[in-house]
Amino acid sequence: MNSDSQQRDNALNQQLIVLLEEIKQYSQADDSAIVRVKRRIALNNFVNAIVNSRRLNKQTQWLGLANYEDYHNEALQLTFMEICSKIDEYNPQYPVMAWVNKIFRWRFIDVVNKEQKKGLTKVPKGEKISPVLSLDDINKEIHQSNQLSQAEVIKEVINKDPGKYLISEQLRGHPEANLKVILLFLLSGKKWKDISQELDIPLSTLSSFYQRRMHKIIDYLKKYI
Image (cartoon, rainbow, N blue to C red; front, side, top):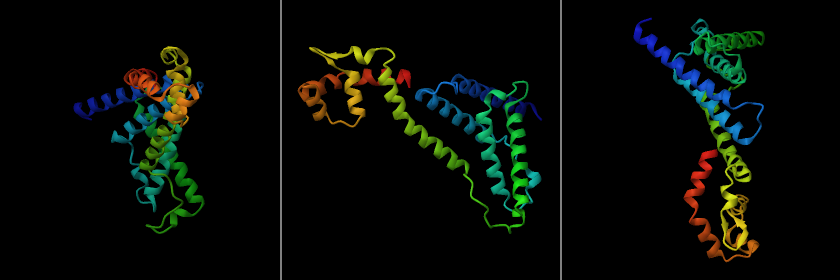
C-alpha cells in the first residue's frame, strides 16, 4: 500500500472514529425523543460514511454464485443492523473498516449458508429470491423516520422549555398567554382564530406578539434540537 493510500485510510478511520464517538454520546438508555432522533441521525451518518468510503469488501469469493447481488445486499443490510446495535463492542485497537468488513464477511457466510439450505443457490441467474432492502431503501426509511420524529423533538423541547425562555415571554397583562402556550396550540393544529377565542385576546394582538419573536423562537429551538 502506497503512502497516499495509507493516508486516505488513516483519514477515513479518524472520520469514522469521530462518528462513533458522536453516536456513543446519545445513550440508548435515554429514551427521550431528542436523544433517539440525534442517535438515529448519527448512526445514519456513520453508515453513509462507510458506504461512501469505497473500502467495503466486495466479497469476490462469492461472485460466481447465482443471485450474488441479492446475497450481497442482504448481508450488507444485516451488517449495518449489527454494527449499529453493537457500537460499544468496537475495539479501537483495529481500524473501523477492518471491524465492519469482518462482520460483513460473517453475515455473507450466514446468508449463503441459509440460501444453500433452501436450495436457492441453484436458482437460474436473473430470477429473484425474496426481496431485501437496498441501501437507498434503508437510507430513505431512516430519513423518513427522522422527519417524523423531528416533530416529536420540537414538541418535547417546547414542553420542557429548557432555558425557560418560552414561558417567560408573556403578553403584557395576560400571563397565561406565553410563547409556550401559543406554540403548543399551534402544534396541536389550532388556528389563530381558535387560539384567540380560547385565550380571550384579540387575534391581531396575539399574532403581533408572536410574530415579533419569531426569529428568537427559531434560534432558541435550534439550540436544543
